[in-house]
View 1 (tube, one colour):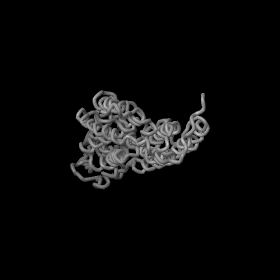
View 2 (cartoon, one colour):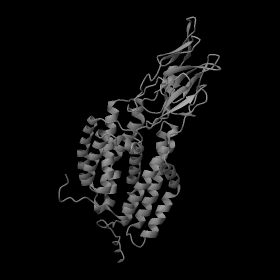
View 3 (cartoon, helix red, strand yellow):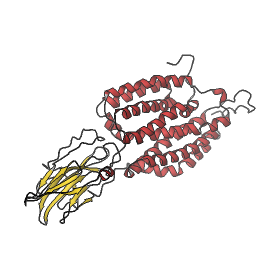
View 4 (tube, one colour):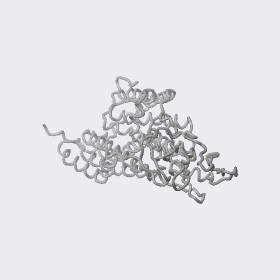
Length: 431
């Protein structure tokens, strides 16, 4: 705990915590772990690393705004609720980029709050160094750190592309179960396998998926593994790579095969990327002849032509994930955000706020930093369909952080350090 004689520094001075090497290291760990390692090496250790780094980043950011005494208990309670209380993870999914898996063992990561508290205590900013010129310069790294933290913590869970998890039939039409990145499921129907339209859930299509499962784990086989038509022709899936055909006379042959590279190229862009790929098959007797389809995950479905060839087709033309109006608008506002905030601080603060110049500088620094980080995050995102969500989320968070930091800096009175020839700033005019 903080010693009673050590008061928490002013908020404007606490901003420098966001530029501390340890904080920036935690942000880097969070970015690399959640957008590279989780995809390449999914497992328990990448999940724990994400929890530890995420708690440290959120705790420091919260301490900048409310002080360490507020930040530590707030972060502890919030993380506990996220990992234990049903419904909290789903409620936070739009902010965190996906549904966080509830696991009480993850609460062990809260132990990092001890070192964070000690770090904040020992790295209390030295007010003797807060000269105006140095104060202005020192806003760049903290702002970049803050915006990076927003990007890292709001996109920690990859949002998978839409994927067809399973196909089935009720004897009258073909059905496909489509799941979006936020575990929202919907159905599509077709009578020819080529043209699909939205549909209500069929009474019995031979498909059963647990909607409560972890959306980042591949559910494996999701429906029927073989299907036949009335003429005695049957198709069977083998090893999720091969479609085998059996003719009425009993002759068996491999009619379609995915290579290992092709299998992994059909990806939702997250862990469990191949969910739905050749996980179910269905056949239907239609007026024009027998129709066979197989689920193909993020690439839609495979449809068999009369000549025995199989080709992929989109279901509902691979519907784009929803982009909230707020996120869509925020990326557009970012274009004029920096100059607008700087102008606002200049108009409002040049006669009232003693350090309005630092505020203007911070507005431009945060604006540029947000743009750079949003662009970098977009490059890291494996799924191009989630690009708008990522850029909008980072833009919104970066603008909020920049506005708060810039106003705090503008309102703070920065005393001259020892030996400085700068005169003290004039007192604010009486109100």
